[in-house]
Amino acid sequence: MDPQDMQNPPPPPNVPTPIMSTLGDYQNRMNDLLFGNRPSYSQDNQRNSQAHDNSGQQAEQSEENNENNNNPQDPLRGYEQMRMRLDIVREGQTYIQVVNFFQNIFLFLCLFAIKLMADHILDITVLVILSIHFLQADHHVQKIASGGMPDKFLQLGYTSMHFISLCLIVYFYDIEDFSMANVFGLNIGYFISTDFTSVGLLSTAYGVIVIDLIFKLITIMPKLIIVISPDSAIGAPQKRRLLQFIEYCSQLYRCALTFGPWFRYFLYSSLRTVFYATLAVTYLGLKFQEVLQYSISVRKTLRYLFSESSFGHTPKKWEYDGQICTVCHEEMTQPIRLECNHIFCKVCIETWLDRNTTCPMCRAVVTKDMDNDWKNGATSRALRFF
Image (cartoon, rainbow, N blue to C red; front, top):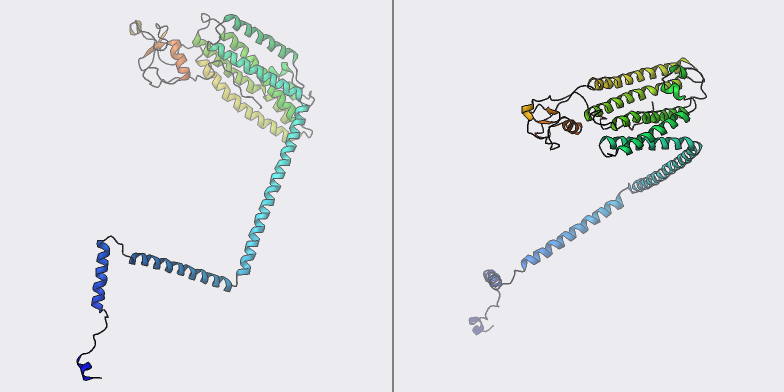
């Protein structure tokens, strides 16, 4: 090397120092922030994190595959899945068998019902006719009692038609082993005697239902006479009490009517052992308890049958002079003062309290000593089977 070259060495290459590179990066980032450019390092970090997650998932899947390939219980898992499939198939077959079983039973019951109706078509027709006749008569009694049929000629005409039809039914219709005179006369000796054709379940139930319907038609007759009577002969409050009393007496008598037929059914059998006699005596005890309950209702109704009022009292004339009834908006007739000191017409307040339990003015609770069931002339529509 020449001495001249050694005195003048070449300039060093343009290699940035760490300090200069740091300053350059800082300047570039400042320029990006100042001129609106987003730093690119955040996007790089997101891409790097996504790539890292994907690689982690692939690694986990590969490990699971290796474990599954190296797991010696794979055949057992296959057997378990096969067993579960077989159980599902068996459950489906069992469901189909149950459906078919009930379908066959339903078809058999339909055939049995059709055969039963065909064999007893006449008896079923009688039951339907009596039921329709009773429902229609009960509706007319309530309609007349509520003032829905004001024409007196229509009332008399319907009452006459009902009386004639009732006489025809009682006189001409007869049931085997059910003599009308002995049944309605409560002749227990007739049912204890052996003078009968059969004591089957269907024949006994049919006879009891028919007797119950006929007696309910008989009960409607005195109710019709009461509701068509003029108010001058029987006042409106007295009519309601009489209708209630007749209905409770009817229910008591209907309860006693079913005793004879069912007592005969439980007592007589082809074996005639002590067991059947025990059944009959047990039924006698149950029936006696039921009759006692109905007799209590009849006695309570009879207690208030001829009383003036079961609530309030009659006020003095100066207490209601010049006032009008707030229910009918007319002058007071037979005024009644309640415990809350409000005064109303006797007919108005009794009619109101048949449907409500409070005063029409202040809504104070009015306590009464008697119930208001069956005061509208209605007859119980429930059939007595026993």
